[in-house]
Amino acid sequence: MNSPKKSGKKPLLILLLVFILPVVAAKIVLSLDLYQGGATNKGELLTTGTSYSSLAMENPKPKEWQLLYLLPEICEQVCQDRLYILQQSHVALGREQDRVHTLILVNDKSDISALSNSPFETAKANNQMSEMLSQQQMIIVDPLGSLVMRYPSVSGREEQVLQGKSLVSDLRKMLKLSRVG
Image (cartoon, rainbow, N blue to C red; front, side):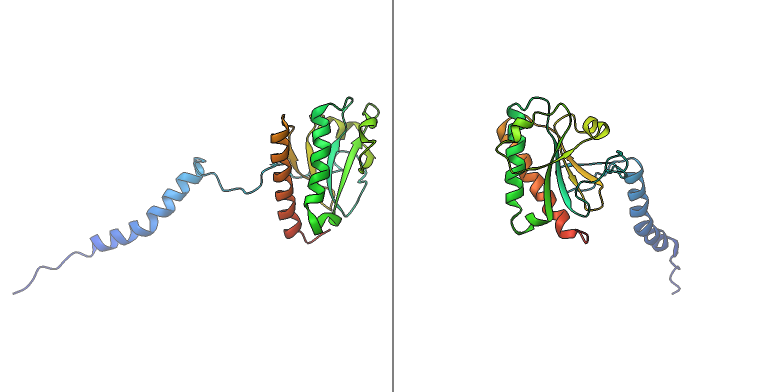
């Protein structure tokens, strides 16, 4: 009539495994870099600390969002496409376009004649900034003067247009989340 007593070790062991196993699995996945977090930005984030002051350049438009592009020595088709994309991207921002200024950086060797039909503001780039932007990339700068995101040079008009759409998308997100500028 006496039923054998069941051991309480098995349910306790199962209960511990249910809670400990997911933690251990997560730790292994994170420590082996098997998880790539989701990112919604399409441009390349620049390292923290890259700013006008770290490049020894004065901010030409303090407390304003900026799109930067360095005008090359010879403004060929890629350069012309870049200027067109910058102009159209600014227009595509709609009501937010007053918060963003497109600046074309020039140095002593820049082909300034390419800007004859463009409404862009220009600023003088120092050597460090010219060196950083030598590959015809576009840069987003926040109101605090930090260089935030880079869009490398791509070839072909279709890729340029897609990159312009990516730039506008990323810029809209930043403007929406920004409490400054």
